[in-house]
Every structure is written in structure tokens, then in C-alpha cells.
Length: 342
Ligand SMILES: C[S@@+](CC[C@H](N)C(=O)[O-])C[C@H]1O[C@@H](n2cnc3c(N)ncnc32)[C@H](O)[C@@H]1O
Image 1 (cartoon, protein in one colour):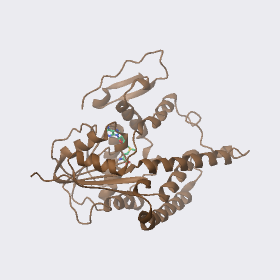
Image 2 (cartoon, protein in one colour):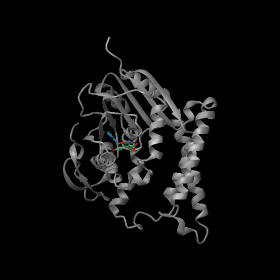
Image 3 (cartoon, helix red, strand yellow):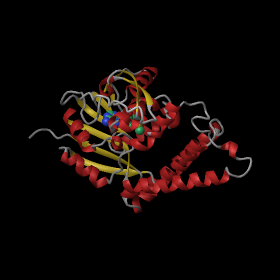
Image 4 (cartoon, helix red, strand yellow):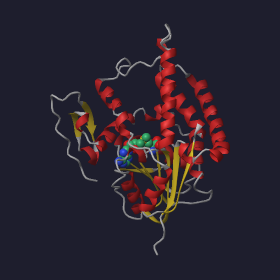
């Protein structure tokens, strides 16, 4: 990975943001920079570093039955029971949600667990989560488009919800191909499809409008989540939170992902898609959770929301996958193998 020198901020060019700079991507120290002068990877790194403090709360991530089932179900859609792996790497691992829940779910029995991410903050949480759940996760900072690992060093490379953050997803597929051993397996899950994402935007927008309309009734405005500043956050937090809209770079058509994987050299390539009504329901729930005053909804809401999501997921899997084209489902899972030479 090439270290990028930080652009010198123009003092006239406010607002700036104070970022703790760590690792190869940004250099070392603390600096006040204009976020507009950062390139997309630097934005990814500072945004996800900042987000690492609250990421698991925001996405209701846990290391229990609920998230274990979620991770294992995604994996088992493409990898059969009984498949074993020695060296495993999660790319764009964040706090380790996918890797650790797969390990807890018995999908990575006896494997050496490794995680890489652009954000050192995320990796710090990942290593801690591993330890708290009884696993030694070796973490290493790295850009998915230029991985710091040796050729042919892993039996399984996995990823969840990270490919759409990369400026050049095909470059990351080339890298994952390079570091896999011949015969090795690639599983990438949780990536948004182009059409599924468009449909989910309509759900988000309408839920948001309905919430704003209801809470504009006198007396109900108290239900709204206070702004970052009202909740005691700093100007820095506000600028960093605003980067959220700049870090989601892509959505994918399933056939394009299959093509990209084949171009990288992979064989046995397949993309399956999932979540249609479950996703609409999930986004409506998440939109309300993001809009409402923290602490108001409580565990009964979370339980009911989860039960609703599971019921709709079963409906999508059992019925809608038979009649609705795969492009309309929100999440895609890529499975591929690195062929043996010759
Ligand atoms: C939405 S989070 C997903 C994290 C985790 N895989 C999960 O499912 O919870 C996206 C992650 O991708 C990472 N990321 C963004 N750009 C990256 C890059 N070029 N190389 C490696 N990781 C990257 C971010 O730091 C962040 O941790």
C-alpha cells in the first residue's frame, strides 16, 4: 500500500475536521484537514475510524444466536456443511461481525482467523471482539485493492458489505484471487444490487416522510432524534457523520459481479441474491430507529422487528425467489473458487 501524503488544508477553506491519523493510509499524528481535500480512500478511513465507536450499536450487531444465524445462513447458501478451511481471511472486516459470527456458528472449525480493513479503529474493535468470544483474530491494516498479504496464503477469503465501498471493486477481486491458494474459496455477501437498492431507497424515503409527518403533530416532535450537536456531539462529529453519504460508492448487477470474478481468473462463479420484502421491512425499521429519540423503542420493538424480518425472509426465500428475477433482491452473495493450475 502506498502512503498518501496529506494535502495541506487551505485555512480559508473551512469546515475542517480533526482526524487522528494512523497507519499507512494517512501517516501519523493528529491534523485538522478539510475533508473535501481528501481522496476517497482517506475519507473511507477517517469515516470508518470514527464510525467504529458506534458501528455495532448502529447496526444492532451482536455475537449471539441472532447474528450467528444470520452469518451462517448467508454462508451456507453457497458453502456446503462439512467444508473445512485452514487459513481464513476476512477483507473489509470492520468489527469482525461476519468472521466471528461464522466462527461461533461452527463454519470455520479449527481455522486460523485473520482480518484486514482500511480502518485501524475498526480492526481494534475486531481484535477485541475476537478475544471476548474466545478467538485469536490476527488483524492487519490493508487496502482491499492492494492487500498486504502474500500470494496463495489463504484457503478461504470472505467479505461482507465492503466491496461497494471500493473505488475499483475489480482490483480487489484480482487481489483476493492472488492471495487465495489454488482450490481456495471466495465468499462475499451483503453487497447491494442495483435494482434492490433503488427499491429500498423508495422505502426509506417514504418511511422518513411518514415519520416526519407524524412527528410534526404538536406534542410528537419530542419523538424525534436530536441532531448531533443537540445530543452533545462536536462540530468534528458533524463533519465526519456527513461523510456517510460519500463512502457508499457502488451497487451491482449480479451478472456484472459474475463477469468481474471470471475476469479475475475465478472458476465455479455464482451469484445468488436474497431479501426482497425482508429488506423493505428491514430498511423501514432501520429508518425509524435512526429517526427516533434513542432509548424510546426498547427490547420489545427489537424482538418484534427481528421476528418480522425472519418471517419475511422465509417468505422471500420460499416463494418470491421462484417468481421474481434475481436482480430485484437487495443482497447478493458471490461464491467462486480459484482453479488449480493446468
Ligand atoms: C459497511 S462496513 C462493513 C464491515 C463488516 N464487514 C460488516 O459487515 O460489518 C465497510 C468496511 O469496509 C472498510 N473499507 C472501506 N474501504 C476499504 C478498502 N479500500 N480496503 C479495505 N477495507 C475498506 C471500512 O473501513 C469498513 O470497515
